[in-house]
Amino acid sequence: MNLRDIQKSWNALGQKDPLWAILTDSQKKGNKWRIDDFFETGAIDVREIMQYIDHLEVNLSRQRVLDFGCGIGRLTQALGDYFDEVYGIDIAPSMIELAKQYNRHGERCKYLLNDTDDLRIFPDNTFDFVYSKLVLQHNPPQYSKNYIKEFVRIVRSGGLIIFQLPGERRVTLRSRFIERLIPRLWERYSDARLEGIRMYPVKKEDIVRLLEESGAILLDIERRTDGDWISLQYAVTKATV
Image (cartoon, rainbow, N blue to C red; front, side, top):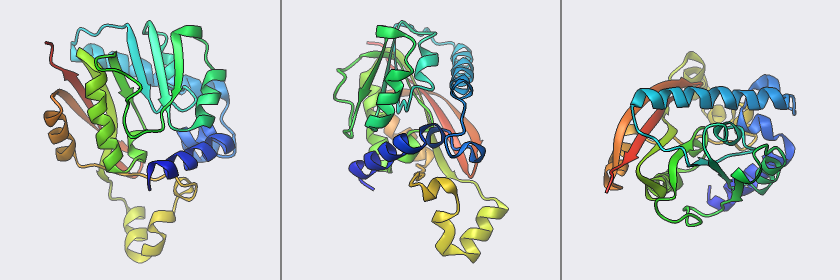
């Protein structure tokens, strides 16, 4: 899948069922998310990540933050309650259009379309905090790895990067049955896959090596179970000059 295919797929999802595409709860498919409930999940996630940052004991400036893969602004809007200026970027024009409609922070919040495999729209050392959740996993590794390198470039010295990415598939009775007994259905057994939402894991050792080569300092890795996947959350900073 190349970047244009990814954009086409997510733009169509943004037109058809955007909230479910972002949070694929089977009970919410078919535009069944209530918008207030949807944004409340973002508020909860951001509240938890801010508490996590406190435990990291980093001296984080709260001037400017980037939400990478913002969708319609589920996390971006919540981040706007903690930072002076917030940016959300996404590959899908339909998502960006909706995000602008739901923006409650005025000029303090900016939504931008980014349809390249880098973040050239931002100069070096732009952000105090770069955050990405449930996004990189939908990009083939050559893209997700490049975006991670770009996170390091655009974060300020002493700033913070937190991103999540699955490292491996979790073995369950269901997955084992489908994979071994019905191999042709393995990539097509969920609604998300049928809608073109793909998952691309990257091994932890590959990400750690990439961060080291990019000049980042790894602060923490949290292991989490996310459906059929073992998901890892990486906390990273950049050395002060």
